[in-house]
Image (cartoon, rainbow, N blue to C red; front, side, top):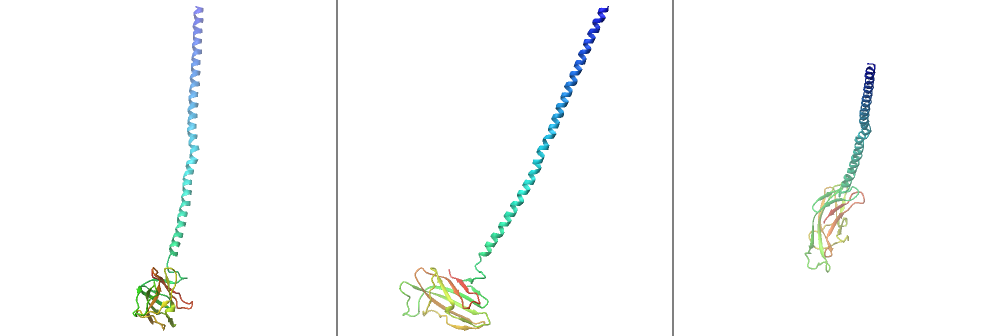
Length: 223
């Protein structure tokens, strides 16, 4: 009887010891899972903290680059407009420029070259151009716009050919030769001037200047 009770007590003690061991193992495993989950959650929370500064900087970099491009494009536009302004044919420091058939005015006179006629003939059989050359005539009008007297003649007119030479006018019996005269305010004179040119040469420009530096000259573009 005593042995039987002793054996039961031993079995009960062993069973209790095994139960305590299993309970301890369960607690150890549970604490390990909790620590791993907490560490994974903490790592997942820490990850955005590294990305957030770089992501917040990218808008600033894009914004800072775009303003630098806009001023460069706007600053280049005035230069193009200035170049377009300088391309005008009527420079205030140079002659007043016009074309054949156009009236060009300064403060003191009005000039108009009505036409340029190539290869004209003299009404006299005794007048001929030099060998291998021909005559070109211009019809020009001048009007005095100033209170002062304007003395206008062929000496006020200078033609320039396509080879940049400037021949003198010839006394040719053609049309109505431009004469010398004094023009008062409102007076107009009209006449023809004839020039001898080589083959292939044409009148390029016609400059008119009767002043003594107190008025702008006139330039007529013939070609």
